Length: 420
Image (cartoon, rainbow, N blue to C red; front, top):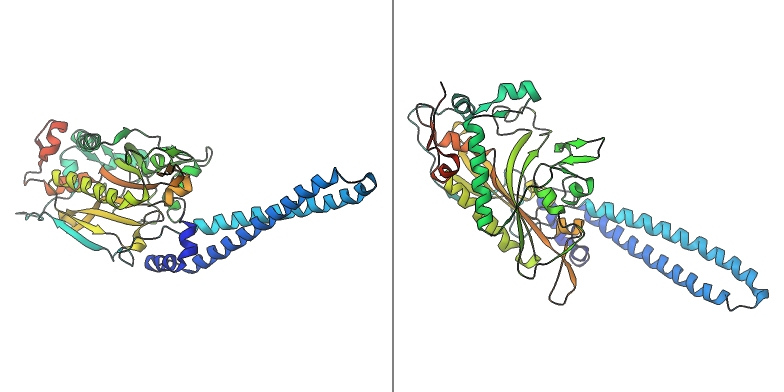
């Protein structure tokens, strides 16, 4: 949730953020009104409770003959307090609903607009020139005995797959390299749960506009996570964490699940857009004033990994309308996919400022010992989709694939050869 102090002090900044996202700015006025109503309801209830308490003290000291009338007055006050408390509760609920309806306020400099309005910040590496039309990642995966979409669909349905042989080994190598890099840079490794409670999913902001993409187990009222960002964000919910020695950083490796609702007909071939995949995700808790610096550091880690994959890629500043509910700014790294003649997202890193931590009540103590809301950030360090870019960019004319040097110690081979 956004900071209500910002709303009260500078509502125009929140309206401008909404317009940049292509969202309705009138929700700002709804929240302002709900905030005023809630504060008035709290003040009225407090006033009546204080009056009731003061009156209660006078009853015991009153003459016996005055007590019946006083007791009657006491009943009237009790009814009034209950009514005021009901109004206070309703006002709190209305405020909470209006508060949750507003996404995070974007950071100055974020491009306005939708999915196609990003700004390219950097392009690294040059796309290869092939002597003959390159094979796509699925053709290569089948030749290598690495990807089996047909049996994935047979066993589980569309957008499921088997990684087998060198495909499974390649994924493990990527994840192991990513996790080893994270540990070397001070991240605490985690294997988090992939089923979470509603309050954990809602606290990270995923039960709003993206709720249709999430698998929900109705009988257990649990959600399958689409990223380990969710359990790592909720890990310290309701706690005061120690940031006196700098940011607290975790790296979670998990299976991730997405329904891909609304993507019918998009990327149906291969493993670009699937229902289940593996990922190493970085997650940071820090003081709000350190968040932008930590965001750049997460991006640097992602770029180092993609450089080691020897891939041509670009870094984009994602436009406001494509940020999602929780992010105030997001950088994506998109690798070149030769058969599509396009850049496709491989990593994403988001600065969520205090939005998630406010929902999840994650705080730290400032220099005066007062609890303050922490900031949270996340970023991808390795994921299954990387295999698309690795296979296509490093393919040879005979269908073999050269393994990037950084992966060879984890994979145990220099070249992936077609199977007989």
